[in-house]
Image (cartoon, rainbow, N blue to C red):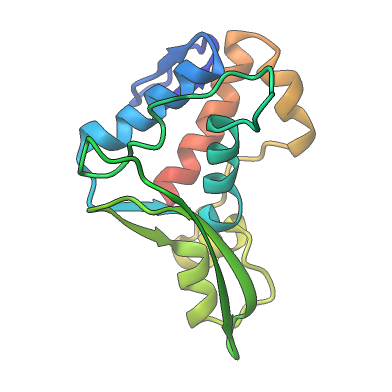
Length: 173
């Protein structure tokens, strides 16, 4: 797990601490590139994670926030920057959706939120609800309002937040 700031050790996980947002993005990119992943799995990554990370890596012109120059190089062709794409998806089953993703040459995205939503008619598609139905396992409880205070908090608090994020990834396996 890549963390922004210090983080207490998490049993069974490699914790990669970073000093600033650019280093965080560089290390997160390195995890994908060095793993040589053919598939990048996420849950609602098309709707949140991918556009959020791209926005953080490529601030608007004139911004005081530094850009992460290497973040776009996420594909298997190490010399080629990957473009960010926006794609409208309209269907009777899923309705109208906008997909936001980094078009990584040689790697495919698997958004399990979209996959599950296209196959099952459920009252809720929150990862906690889907995980309970599919695996019987509940997500760790981590209230949204604690994200900012824990980010600015202690190494132990960041460990708690990182463990929550790590479990999300494990539920996708």
